[in-house]
Image 1 (tube, rainbow over the protein chains, first blue to last red):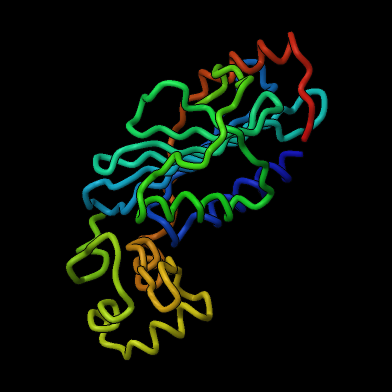
Image 2: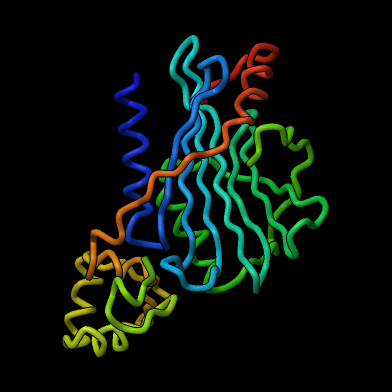
Length: 151
Length: 93
């Protein structure tokens, strides 16, 4: 179980390294040891240059009673200009997207998609770094998930 | 470490293949070969238009400087998750 988790962490870190920006990562456990969270943060462009965007990937695992991956939060924040946020989330069984232009805009939950390849979503989000964020064509989500587990 | 010291030339967020070739004194076709062989990551903006992120350049020219850094992260949200887990079963996807 622990080996599987560490393999997953290595896989995610590897998927981001040498591509979008400067990568940092970490892990932590819940107070009862039932959950584990891994986070990969990509500062774009990194290495001391002024920040254009931040890409954050969070995955949470439930260890008790069975090992299950049960949530991911995949967030892009553009800053300072053009500012905005776009994210792929899956938690509480509801895949959805967040799109905020400008950041903090109300009613920003949209229907989402599930994906198996983290590289795919990373690529999609990274293209927004060069082209900007647009919420056009997204369908609002009617029964949005609770935000308690969001990043 | 800052990009200028890592690379030895003026850093910028993105490079064209020609810009990078000039900076590292190779033929532009060499840079394109790296991109096509997936030895250098590049964003494809059009049929023949690429932009190479700084991270890809650092990774190619100074792999040690591109290594990920381990950080301490906030886990306070996991207490909420564990509490919710007790009240509601999680369904695997």
